[in-house]
Length: 140
Image 1 (cartoon, rainbow, N blue to C red):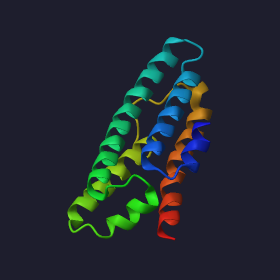
Image 2: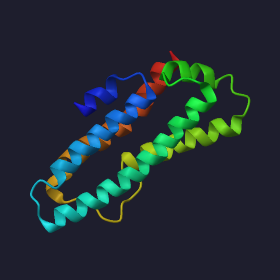
Image 3: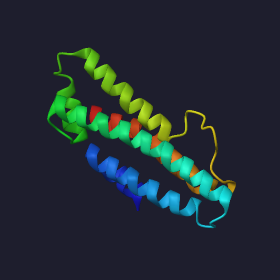
Image 4: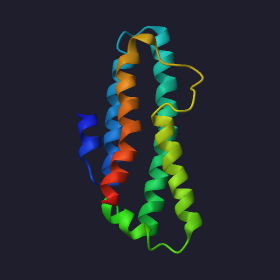
């Protein structure tokens, strides 16, 4: 459900909400067995993803403050009119880092429990595939 919602939304805040739905689902699957290693991996996974989500939410707030829009196509159009290129670059870097953390581009100090790896691969793939898809849609 979270993956479908993330791919079908056209609103950047709804994208944030659907990523949180995916985080909740993946956390539940990760700690389902209740073993110590699973719980430790789950806590580290949630902590790292909450930091990425905070960065993503901050970027969403700045985007709204700069463009006045949360619709991705409308925001992309309005970003062309922004007179401060440094702000747009900083905003793009915030989104890049948030998506990179969610896509597991940066090496995590402790990987999740091996039994939970299958679901986290799908979660990482959806986070990695989403930004280029939206960029192409917003440019057309």
